[in-house]
Image 1 (cartoon, rainbow, N blue to C red):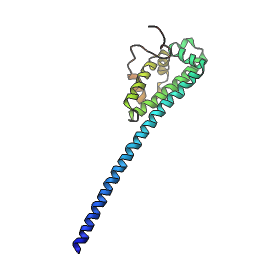
Image 2 (image 1 turned 180 degrees about the horizontal axis):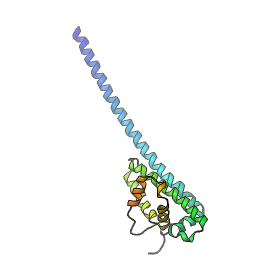
Image 3 (image 1 turned 60 degrees about the vertical axis):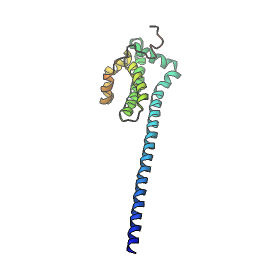
Image 4 (image 1 turned 90 degrees about the vertical axis):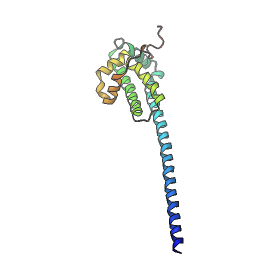
Length: 167
């Protein structure tokens, strides 16, 4: 009779152990799925952040002109237009700082990041943004400043200001 209770107790412990292992595996699967959803949401938020900065440029011809001209020749803009260009530049670079932050913390797919990285290289090499960057680097995180300062300029800088120029 005593043996039966020992066997029942052992079987109960085995079943309990299996249940714990299955619970841990289930939780691991849920964490993996949750992490994947968080990454997708982060990548979408990054695209939305930059889209929110650039959308007004598509919808307003005057803002687009200020952005396009300011990228290449700040002296061609009035003081008021330069101020608008600098505001847009700040927002543009802040969106990229957030995208970079997401990549650094593993929330951005490497292939997507490479596209963002390539785009940023072109824009920070533009004379207008380069000038702004020299004036206001302290408004960005130290990590992002180091990253931007380490970027190699592209062999041919291409922004909306130069994209359609004949070479």
